[in-house]
Image 1 (cartoon, rainbow, N blue to C red):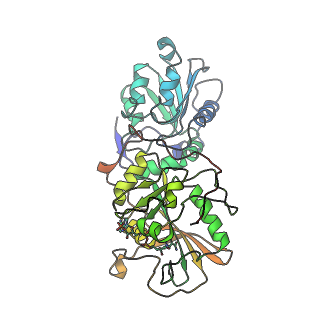
Image 2 (image 1 turned 90 degrees about the vertical axis):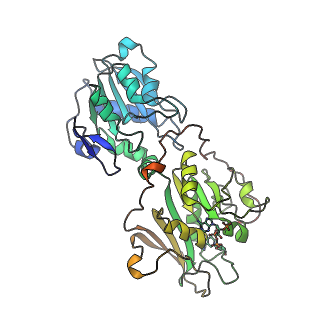
Image 3 (image 1 turned 180 degrees about the vertical axis):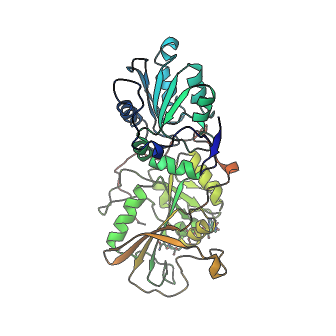
Length: 402
Ligand SMILES: NC(=O)c1ccc[n+]([C@@H]2O[C@H](COP(=O)([O-])OP(=O)(O)OC[C@H]3O[C@@H](n4cnc5c(N)ncnc54)[C@H](OP(=O)(O)O)[C@@H]3O)[C@@H](O)[C@H]2O)c1
């Protein structure tokens, strides 16, 4: 079987159709019912698993030769059996032999906390596998090829769009090999993030601050440098205008070498703060990914935001421009390692909006941030990872805001 290399550099079989290639194609004949019915069921099963964390939500149904469902399975999070293995564990070896497996994600090809699903499928003598979305993981992907090589019939792309949507954050981070990074700042129209004495609360208006808190709540982690903790002592929670906590709270992360005071408000956060004690951005992103963090919200200050940009790991910018002038030395960004105009970082505007009195800009690098080198990538199922920060809570936080 010949192979080809995809955008992420993984090998793929040439004759396994990608989701987009399946658009408009007739359903595979596996039952009197169209295969989409079974994939819909697998998507429903997938949704029972945890929506955040290290591993994706995956669902699976097993069909006998008459096209009747004989087993169902789903993945319950890192450390638990994958959906295919969960489903196969519910039937006998005789039932599994010759069956058709309908699964939302391409069966994985690697050994993490659990063994490779491809081997379990081959060992069970499954005749055919139909999956929706391709696994972009650099060590977990390529399962379709392994199955084809073992003589299992493979088809792909059925309801691929729905599954790619269901797995959006996980897919994005799996393709990058690190969490998706958004850098946010609020500045005056003349590009200052603080006044000369360091005061920055508040440069932007209420509507802008309300949106920032929603954006925090949509992220798995919120990241600042030690400078911001020492200057502002922020709580790094996501709150409503009334001061209640949003349902999802991002894990607070402080990067930098200086110690922070033991009574810092980040230590009151519903999730345990990660205080790195070093300045290494790549190491921090790897550590966060291994904890199941898929998206990171960098809220400053200028030194750390600039270091992220210079490291080439920023995927999106949220910029709030207030109609004020501050002048002075406290620029929104510091050194980006750019010494001449030809080295500039070009951005592509995604959105621009008047938000209260402020201007809100959403942009991304004109060229996508390069993923980490393959050597530093972890698989999608890393052993001994702590749980992702997701517990909802409604306890109001004390004292100071940021
Ligand atoms: N307008 C806004 O949106 C906004 C947002 C946040 C903060 N602010 C304002 O920004 C000011 C603080 O600015 P800041 O630049 O000092 O804050 P910062 O970027 O939060 O912290 C800077 C510190 O982070 C550490 N650090 C961690 N990783 C680093 C790396 N890769 N490269 C360099 N340094 C790294 C360094 O301290 P170590 O020596 O400890 O390593 C550095 O001095 C305050 O006035 C605050 O109010 C404004």
